[in-house]
Length: 279
Image 1: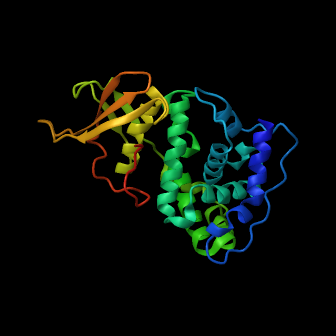
Image 2 (image 1 turned 180 degrees about the vertical axis):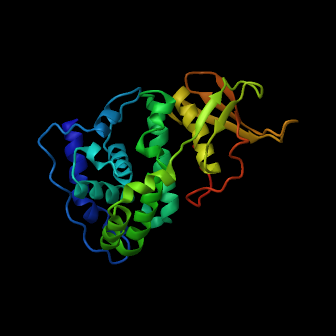
Image 3 (image 1 turned 90 degrees about the vertical axis):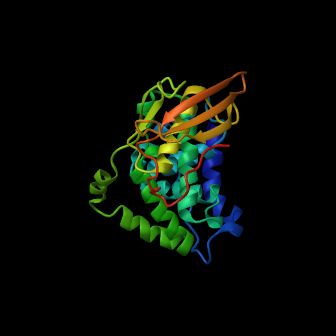
């Protein structure tokens, strides 16, 4: 674990050189991250990646999770200072290939990847896991702002936007992004017993919640299960519509799950991107 952590810190320091060919036009060189504390470095993120059904075997997810904690204003949970938190965010931009795609798409992918991974780990209840920064609407909005500035104006633009995002009194913005989807009902083997997705702000968030719930139940996409078929039903007599997902389990067998998506159907995505789902 200590070797993996040192590798992560080394990558942060060398990322501007290693990924220089992918850097935005004429960015100012980013400073090296803050020095790591005396080992072992144990933070809430470290606990997340080391526990659960499928502990992560590399440092990439630890950096992504650290970036989401930082964007949610919770860098104290990293047991690091603000400068280190900034370096995690900038490194995460390179990991998701931000220079090659619009910021909102890259951040959408980053958040969904982290969400699915944490749900597959099942290190707590579904509701408890949804309280973590990868599911925070504030973290997603902040990351999108920071990514747009970084993509346009490099490190200096990122620093300037960070100062705006976390200006004194920024905590008041958290109330504007409160709330999260929840699932009710089930077990989902028919329309009558459908899993209801409620409280999603957008269709993208709602669809992500469906796949997050599948990950919570069955594990990692493309490892413990694969999507076989997905279809949207027409409205039933009461006006409800259902997303029907068929998955194949790598351990054998197939499952069909009915999700009642009436509550969020046709809501515009907060990040301006099309809803995404695992293959």
